[in-house]
Amino acid sequence: MWARQCKAFTIYKQLPSRDHTNMDNVEVDSAPLQSNTDLVNTNPSWTHSFPHVLVATISSFLFGYHLGVVNEPLESISLDLGFNGNTLAEGLVVSTCLGGALIGSILSGWVADGLGRCRAFQISAVPMIIGALLSATTKNLACMLLGRMLVGTGMGLGPTVVSLYITEVSPPSMRGTYGGFVQIATCLGLMGALFVSIPVKEISGWWRICFGVSIIPAAVLALAMMFCAESPHWLHKRGRSVEAEAEFERLLGASHVKTAMQELAKSDRGDDTDAVRFSELLHGRHFRGMCLNTHTYILYCLFSFLFFLFQYLCLLLGFYSCCHFLAFVFFRLCYSHVPFAVVFIGSTLFALQQLSGINAVFYFSSSVFKSAGVSSGIANLFVGVANLLGSVIAMVLMDELGRRVLLLWSFFGMAVSMGLQVAAAGSYFSDSGALYLAVGGMLMFVFTFALGAGPVPGLLLPEIFPGRIRAKAMAVCMSVHWVINFFVGLLFLRLLEQLGPRLLYTIFGTFCLVAVVFVKRNVMETKGKSLQEIEIALLPQE
Image (cartoon, rainbow, N blue to C red; front, side):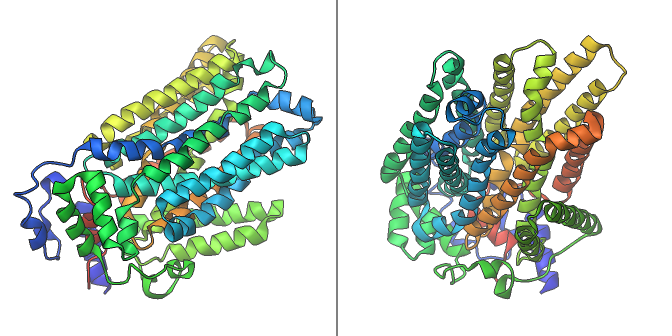
């Protein structure tokens, strides 16, 4: 068994893209697919699936909008609701949304698997509509916090479901490009929040409009999903093969339905209709050993140490019981049924994404630009443009260069950018030179993040997770994302005071370099492969 899993993992890492794949290297019967190669010589047209993907990315737009909507209006909110000067209350208005997002991400796998991807989108829109309405009409802090919590719950549901949906409805040749839409929509949401909040200082009560306007795209998402295709993979897993064929025809065109259904059947292990319990991610039939090399084992030990350190911080802050459970889940997931545990890869990628310091850079950007004599509005615009430009380039290159290459160069570029920030914080340059270096390093960091570290994990992980555990595994990985995101935001300013910018940015840069090594050793390329080819190669039938 151990040798067979190691062999499968090696085959998977070396499996080329779909355009050059020789499926004789994979020990499966490829005759059904070979018989159709003369019938289908071209990739499915993007025009069939594009409208469905476009509707799904409204969820990402709302995600970005609600992340940024409270930044500019926060002072006006505190004045109107009577907690001006109370930094704890202001922090709660910002961070309560992250707590709700953690709850939503934990539930997202069960909602997406139990009710379907389209219904999950509609369910995620409901708390965002109710929460935005509460926030826009509230007269006190309590209702504002309740509204932010509800909005956060919808935000937590959204990223998992949109990653699953785009992965499962996209043609293999367009999956990377469509995955880039998620980051672009998030950027547009952030910039939309900035644009809507421009009059907040001049018009009394405008912050209520800022919250209320988000009800419109949330309602559009809920209504438009009634006309979008359901994921054929989810329908097939539920035993509704006839409906899956009909949805494949809507998404790929009639000429590609037979081939798509044959690929689904090949990856069917006879148990996809069974419900997946959370415990199955931790033990039982799916609980088997990993295939580890020396470098991978060293990295595993490193992240084990980091997670224990995270648990210790939670103990100091009074969150021990919650973190103890998360640590238990994390370590059990490291021994999942997939060679080298794809759930461990996913959790680590999201952890490194947050530990790179991206949110800290966003939080600190206004101060850096302000010291350079640039207003916060212009600073946020520059950061937004850099983020959007990188996302557009990533969308173009995702299916050309591949996911792994973009991840490697993205994290490497982020490490270099942090090096510029460290140099700017030193005494090697004049004041003006240090400011230019700090601003340039910050924009470069945001740009290189948007090239790969931002959009790729949300696309890559649903590709490498087997269909049976895809939704719940994504829920676990997104939960890790939100937990670390919360603590980075909570501890950043305190660490900046205690350690200083040079040491703190050095730590962030080190995490970026660790990410380069981790991606190079353990992340495999999925460009151009169908989900069934990936699953068959990673989990060969026994």
